[in-house]
Length: 73
Image (cartoon, rainbow, N blue to C red; front, side, top):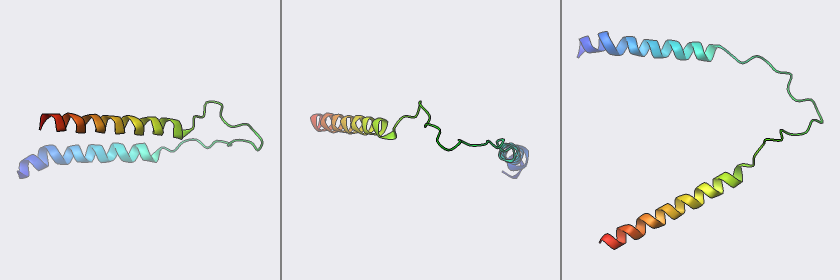
């Protein structure tokens, strides 16, 4: 077990930690930000439309699974 840890797991863990640290160390370049009075992004989509459809689909799937389970018993 100790040889497995030293030969395989430890180098893999160090590689993952090193690449993660390098990725986090590189920040995005600063932007000037939007100027006051500019219109909002025209491609912005409200979150509510997608979530309500996803919730309705999940409820329908759950009802279908419950009905199928009752038929088998």
